[in-house]
Amino acid sequence: MTKVSMTINGAPVSADVDGQTLLVEFLREDQRLTGTHVGCDTSQCGACVVHVDGKPVKSCTMFAAEADGSEVATIEGQANADGSLNVIQQAFQDHHGLQCGFCTPGMVMSTAALLKDNPKPTVSEVREYLEGNICRCTGYHNIVKAIMAASGQDVSAIAAE
Ligand code: FES
Ligand code: FES
Image (cartoon, rainbow, N blue to C red):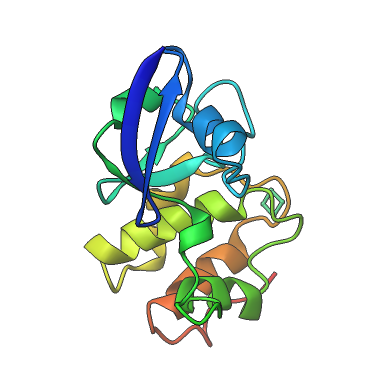
């Protein structure tokens, strides 16, 4: 077992973990933060995206021990301080950017990372950035629209499907 310490959504956490424990397993099974999802075994779907030291990471590709000393952010920490949806979450709701919602935590976390680096992305940039996030339900159109809206851009010309 290895002792790991990190902050998760701003709260300090220490635990003994097996060296083979994936970060996503640690978050879901040890910390009970089940908003981070597991949608594949192949590092492709992006349902497990969290932020580690401000960077988006597929948490199924990283050992918990590798996050020792890091600041980890998950979907559970994304709402506003008063519990209301943040601007990205609200845009996904307003523009019907989800159906089953399984991909949504990863989509929201990836979007937050995108908008931090590129506050006004083009539609093409959004689509390219999301290539690591797979959605089985929506066809992506409304996800892209939601992200454009979250960035404060006019989405009236983007067709909803
Ligand atoms: S569960 Fe991590 S990419 Fe699919
Ligand atoms: S909304 Fe169902 S997988 Fe994306």
